[in-house]
Image (cartoon, rainbow, N blue to C red; front, side, top):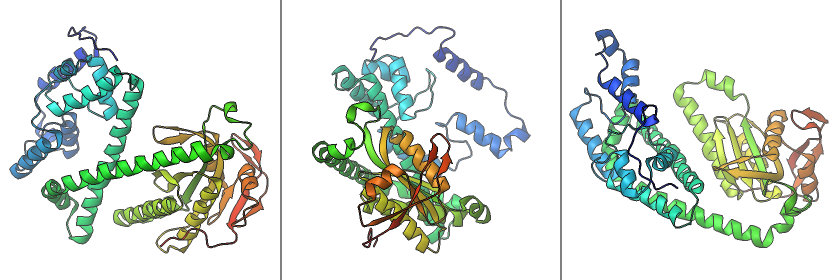
Length: 403
């Protein structure tokens, strides 16, 4: 990570372009009456300067937002980007890469955006690079993981609180969002404590999984693969998809609240089943959930439980699913590789209420009486050629017990 300080600005540099754009905004002609009355245009203009609260905002909201900001970011904004970079002893170029990874907006040289806490956070990351604990690339990746996950988490939490007030306190969306300003000061400490608690718990679980793989999982991961050195994909996992049937047509007939309830029920129920089965929820994308498990048996149990539980749920349509055991690559919290692609292709082939798997996974599970594997018609699958799918069904035993 470069620690050079260079305050000169070339005419064609990004900093110069940003400053020119800022000056253009400052000297732009005043909008006409028709333009000022257009709420979409007003919103677009406001979002270009997200640090400024619109002039017509009520004083009580303006004061509440200002107080919340001081509490959340550690005081009054008082530093520009070059000042913070200089205090941390890092070049502006390197600082900007870290800030972008966190999801910060692009700033001009004269915008006052940062606090002392921002300088301390930047210095912490720079210090780990200088001490040789991290490379600059790894530091940026860590910052991006924090920025992206917390961004999604904050949006999720705000919408959950707003939806609760709309449903249970008979508020409009606007009323609920205004009420949230008053609620947040009391909620911040508890949510912050839960965030740290959850992160430590999740890290502890990851440590245990790593120890398990190192001591007991070698045979499973090398079985049938010719050893560890024959593939660039280091992780052997069960990869599963579950997809709501007829989601698109159903969503067109639902109002906003009913659709939100269905999606929330699908996501929360999927997360619960995957957790009970010892898997990890990778992500949900509307009508689809992607998960991984440590063993093919665990992945199969989760797949069957998802299918069974959604079949019995009157509020949700059936699912089609697939689970495949194989190697994959994990990056940025997501997973990649042919195993993931195969699971996705099989999901699209599955009939409503069924789970498919491939021949390799079926061969791994065939001697386990908890599962029944039924060969299906050989099918041409894009990217894989002709494959032999197997339908996975429940055998002996109750499967996962979902309270």
